[in-house]
Image 1 (cartoon, rainbow, N blue to C red):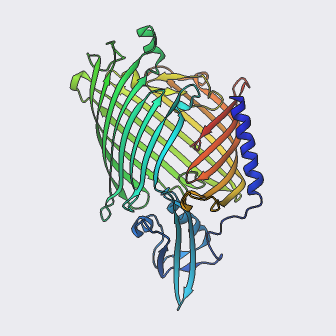
Image 2 (cartoon, rainbow, N blue to C red):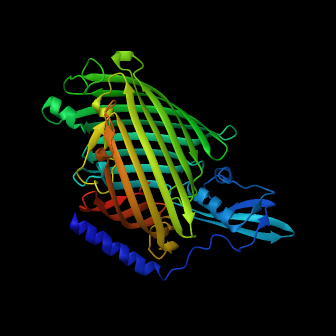
Image 3 (cartoon, rainbow, N blue to C red):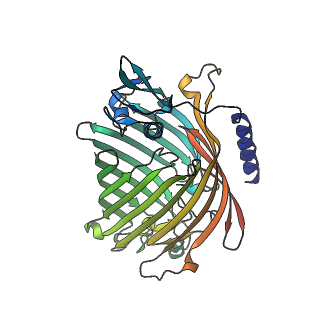
Length: 444
């Protein structure tokens, strides 16, 4: 692990030394305001115009300035199908035209991968993922994944955010099979050793978008979960095989600028699912509530905070659907080894970010054979200070401060968009014990 940290540290400082000589992307020519008379889009060889236009919070007759242009540019970039986005207003024959220039990314990805399940270096998963992004130019995604190693699986998914453009309807469906390793220490104690479950899951979701910021989604699904034995609590039904019907609804309010790494905006997620509905003696619920806020201060300094809550209740909740801390959700400072489980999970985080290197373009067009759309990147290096806290507990169990895991620290994030974000962090727990964290993706 120490060698991996040293290698990433060397890579980060190498990137910083290269980028210091680069200039920031010019995404908006001029610092003046204009009243928009016309909007045109250039560079979208595959993407339909309306995919871009529906993300804008401005239209004909609205006043555009640099701040508003930056916000709308980031909303377009958040579609995650473009390498570069520029907004260039110009005056021609007394008509103020806003030109949106985009560079499309590569849309077909047959990529071998190695990943860490539950952010754990002891749980390596590897395989191949085939993704067809922006299918038909309507931002549709087709994806198939074959994973071996830890928890081998196969999955297929299809996402269409524009099932009906005029009504703002969307569709998402997925199928997944997994040999799933039990996470619950309680279940392991009941059985006497750890075990695996065979899980087949299917989901079908219909959603409607209201304006730019609101999304309501209805979901139905079916889970088949096979355990090599029967034990109450390890199984939700009275059999070693749980067959669970699922219905649910979710609501999202999202005003973030750049979804991949926001500086401004609010993200709210509310979800409620009913599982079993009494069939096969299975009847319980799962609820999620999350709130995030992002704000810029003193120009470059960004503050963000998050509160998240997951609840399970109703009838008998199986251990495989418990709320866990220390797997995909972790508290920095207790990142390695510390695990909690229960019906409910609470997480809170605050973070300050400051750019060491602001947004910079790197174009590697000199590399032969590879398409240009794979050789253009939006790069930034961000320094951060953070604090996390969280716990998991059973329903009815009292909550006290000493049952929360808490940590704090600092680190560096390297943004290589639209493809990846890498983080190297040093965290401390309540006793001052340190740990290095090497992770992928934004913290939240």
